[in-house]
Length: 176
Image (cartoon, rainbow, N blue to C red; front, side, top):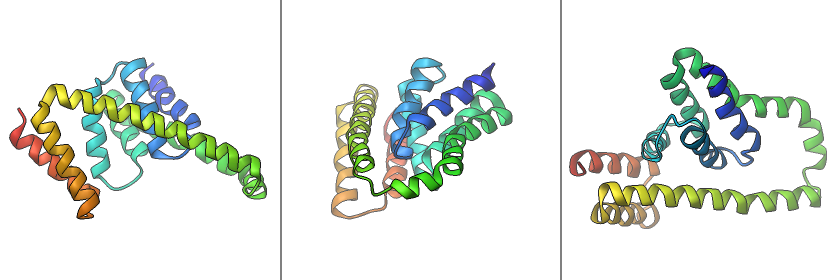
């Protein structure tokens, strides 16, 4: 049963998560925290931070880890296959059709309507993670991580992986 649940937990977001990894994250979070209860929002946030620090697509890293933790190697394979199956099938079946209509105004409008939805989903996820950090780590630590992270990313153009690793070290050393 767990393998089927893992498959569904990643297959559904992969079908409706138009836009790649960032669009999948809130959908995966909903599945693993709300629907199946495998993770808390805190634990999912930690997993997201670690997955962002590693190279490669975020959705497959999360699927592999969550699948392995919940169902071992077979669970990992089921979750990974569920993550890539919709895209694989769509590419095989619809490649010619997509190439023919990629410049269509209707397709362009549809894509334009999906982007705000993804932005709202990412905003909700960010708010949940900020709210959790604020309550768990405290106002000062949360503010320090936000301000320093923003400055490093925006002003000093530090690569995100180093900012995430720095935040992990900061949390490991100073937040108890």
